View (spheres, rainbow, N blue to C red):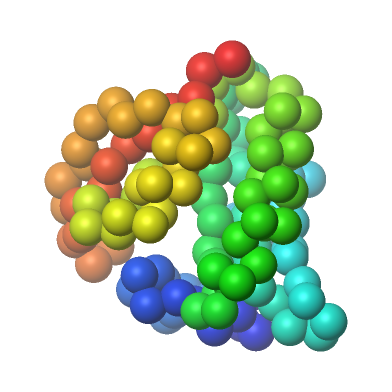
Length: 130
């Protein structure tokens, strides 16, 4: 995570990327790193809330967009193979590209989470139910 240079829309999470405790909380059987050569372009995964439900997360590099097709295919494959009945993702309310992508992945908008992020930004909750 410390080597990831986040896209501007996720810049609020930069302060957590060098926090070992934060990294350990995300690193589990469902954490993945996307690389191009020796550059990290994405880190993503899922945290199981309980059997059948997971909270998904993704952190993308500032230049990840030019690798979008490959990233989208990888995430689509992961979602198809994922063992959870319900998967949730949150996206900043004003991050249109992120909201567009989560909808492309088959997630549906469920509501607004006010003051949700550590710095108090609002996020929209999306879910995909198999």
